[in-house]
Amino acid sequence: MKRRIAVVTTSRADYSHLYWPLKLLSEHPDVDLRLIAMASHLSPEFGATIREIERDGFPIAARLETLLSSDTDIGMAKSIGVAVLSLADTLGELRPDLLLLIADRYEMLAPASVALSLRIPIAHIEGGEISEGAIDDAVRNALTKMSHIHFTSTEAARERVIAMGEEPWRVHRAGAPSLDHLRRSQLFSREEVEAACGLDFRIPAMLVAYHPVTLERDTTCEADALFAALEEIAGQGTMQILFCYPNADAGSRSLLARTRTFLERHPSGKLFVNLDAVTYWSLLRCANVMLGNSSSGIMETASSALPTVNVGFRQKGRERARNVLDAEPNAASILKCIAEARSASFRNSLDGMANPYGDGHAAERIVEVLTTAPLGQELLIKRAMLVVSRTVS
Image 1: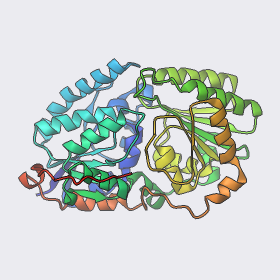
Image 2: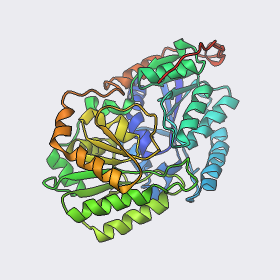
Image 3: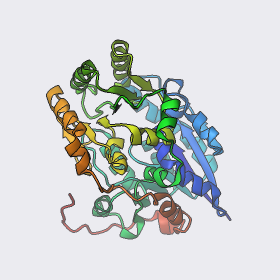
Image 4: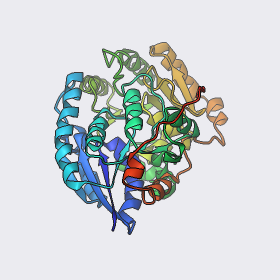
């Protein structure tokens, strides 16, 4: 019999990471793939990205409306509850042999909780990482302890998962699956990106990917510094400023309002509601600098040796390559790091650098394990490991 594997995707961000694992699973002769799309995928406010999944040809087993139209932490909490109710019926009917989840978004607590109640084994991608300034850090660790198979991006992340008491045979270093786009996808040329996005790269481009800092009571408390620095850059007239849409977190609407106000004053910039994975990766290759606090600025820009300025607290503790410059959340520090990132000496220093998050072969490693791992009680029953005192940086 085919192995039934359910996969949950909630947003444009995790779908771009999941694309190649989904592609290989959908083509595997021994897999019955069931894709569950929920949360911001179905939200017009966030671009109704379920259309991208449909264009890619993946059959969607369930479409779950779970995202409240809200901009508060209470709305986030209630969205988890709505998702639990919806997923209880969906997973109760599907009863997959395995449930595949990725990363650290708060809404992933819902499928993990339901699967735990229904005795459905969970496989989790990108555990063992650190982002101390967001609730993502606690979510990621909770998902690790609720999961039965682990795919980490780095060796240090693998060691952290084992240090949490997970049996080593369950923990596999696969690499970050988003990096598979560089090896497997046909990226656009510079001219094709210009045509698709309405850009002119004769003017240097700075890509801004900035999200609410969800562990702060005021999730946009660092935004004043960011926009003050952007005003200075825009006033110089030497760069076009390109914004990516923020995550569906408390404070995202406030950030969007500030972004739109900024663009009214500086119409040479652009705001992209959604960029599919190929367009996004192609844009990373054409940009001159990335600015913000997104994990993409750390995990993905290294593959293009793109100078990146990481702002503030959100990604504190995450492993990074030498293309990342860390700025304090004040305008002076941000501007200083941008100037360094744009310098010829810094760009030249990145020649030959490698990305610690993987080599573009993650999907095949993930699918190999998912299609051969033992099922049933052997997988469900996790034996407690004696964790020897150790320090994992």
